[in-house]
Image (tube, rainbow, N blue to C red; front, side, top):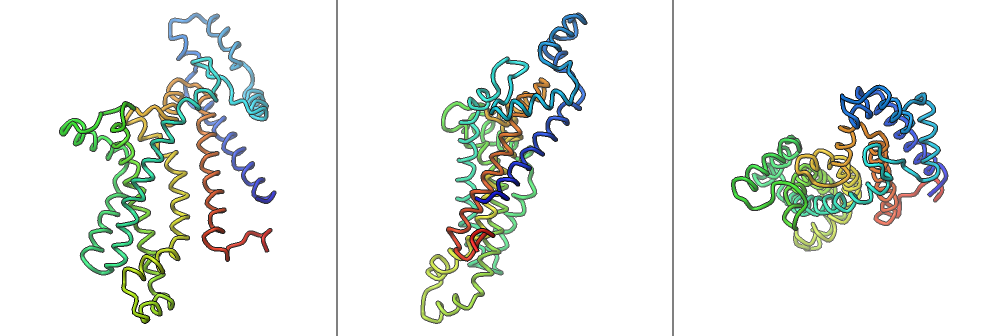
Length: 306
C-alpha cells in the first residue's frame, strides 16, 4: 500500500467527517430541547448547552472534534453520556451478523442464477432469470421489508416480526438486503460469463471434447471472476449503508438503527461516529478488493509494482 493510496484514504475520511459534521449541525432542531423538553427554563437550557460545549462557535466545535479524532476518541454521546466507541462496539456484532448472512444469501442466489442464465442464453430460462433480476433491482428495501413481514411473520408466522431474538430473526432482514444485491450480482455474473464463453480458449476446450459443464465451471467461471469480485466488494460495503433502512424496518439493533436513533435525538457525536465507521468500513472493503485483484489476476499491478 503506497503513500498515495493512504493519502487518498485520509482525504476521503476527512471529507466525510467535515461534511457530516456541518450537515448534522445545520439540520433544524436542538439537542438541548430534545433532552430537557419544552418545559425547561432558559437558564437550564443555557447551563446544559455550556456543559455540552454547544455554546461555542461552530468552527471551534469542529476543531475540538478533529482533536478528539486525532486521539482516536469519537466523543461522548449527548444523550447517554457514554463514549461513542462503546455504543458502536455494542451494536457492531448485530450489523456484522446481518451483513454476513445477507452476503451468503446474495451469493447463494446470484451465482446459480447468473451461471444458469449464461449457460441457457436466449432461452426462456435466461429470460426468467433476468426478469427476477430486474424485479430484485426495482423493488426498494423499504417496500420489500414490510411485504416479507406481512407474508412470513403475520400470515404464516414462520419468523419474528422484529428484533434480534433467536436464529430465525435474521432471516427476513437478511433476505431483504440480499435480494436486491443478488439481482445486481447475477446480472454481472451472466454478462461476464457470456464475454468469457466467446473467447478462443473456451472454443478450444470444447473442440478437445470437454463437456459444457466442465468448460463452464473449470475454464469460464474462474476467468470471469474479476469483474464479479469488483461488484461483490462494492456490495459488501453497501450492505453496511443499506442496513440503515433495513435495521430500522425490522428494529434490528445494529449500527444502522443506532444512527437513526441518534438523528432523532440530535445526538451529534453518535451520528458522526456511526457515519465515520460506515465510511471507514466501505473504504476498507474497497482496499481489500484491490488487494484481492492481484491474487486473482497477477497481470494487474499498481504503479509501485511496475
